Image: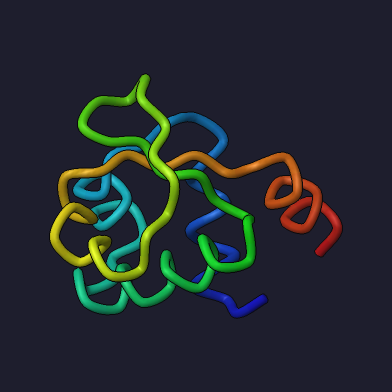
Length: 85
């Protein structure tokens, strides 16, 4: 797990919007999207769209279009990896 991925998971104990996550991690939108894709691919983060209550299966082809309007939450596996570091 990279340092930016660790920092992202650190913010995802509760559902958090892309915009809030960007402000808290101070990553550029492109960098945040790249790291979120990696975390989603590994199953460490869950994606919610169009609201914080509707979980959406991760689709790499459409993520770029909806990512900035999405919400995120660390999965159980993500929390375990975050806490074991």
